[in-house]
Image (cartoon, rainbow, N blue to C red; front, side):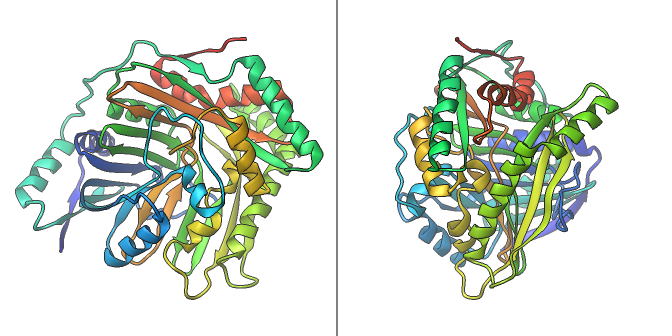
Length: 441
């Protein structure tokens, strides 16, 4: 049984920064941030909380096979708050696919847990829930005192990190052109092509890196995750899937423009993005894919597009976001919405299965947690999951640090412009680490 009480926070920013320290100090923990700074598009803009932290594991779901079946059983036997993630390579359990590219981080494909301590933050009020027979009131009081104290920001910051790509610049351009030949033949209409940037033997304090990243790039779906020696530091602007009662919502992003140096240049970039036929075509193709995916688990005739190609502004970019929803059919298992829609169309392409086959062929790294999803299930079965993009992945034992960026390739794509878009998306990460990319010609 959980005990619960509320607490009024003195310094909300400091409290949330200190929550990242507690996640890092736990063997298993997640901090979700974001709804306090952004109106999320569509009729689901009211967030359930401004931040949530899950500290320590009371019970875990760590499958080695039949992952979705195992998660169904775990959710049915644990009608509680459940936090965790879905890795991109779960695609191999949904479709007849393989993942053979190298993986420098090694996150397992799925992990979920019920937390010993749960914190839900709204404005300056935090609700604290803890499992009485596993956590004492004295421990919780000590935790609250640490969280509402001074931010402990002393830790390792690399003076400068140099990232390398798995591609040279010319190889990336050549790969985009090879993908376009598949599009010209009619194999696919669109594909999300990504490249990993990595650095070896890096020593950082993950909580400091996440807090710095989120400060530079606050987004609706920030996530800081620790699973033993592996860390995710995520500043994602994109929602993958949310359930509100009998309805599910997906909000794919396709279409990116850089921020301008002034309000006038910002308006020019927004107008250009709004009217760009290539960007709109990318977004609409993925909206059609999401509609098709949702129709597999929705009541007939209930799938709708709530908003098409809306433009939303973030600190470093403008994004084109659409909202698609559907009313869930009767008799579904808890994971059926994920089986029908994962991986998300914005990170694969159309048609989805062929796009994923070509992603495996052309990309040079296993995606792992990148372009997967992090989120939570509530005791009533509602859930919310992000898309893992604009993220750093880190192995604290080996010191391997990486991030991956990509974009949608269509027939009209220009290879040089696609590479430039990748650099725009990498900007916040590079600034956070005072990092550079060493791109060979």
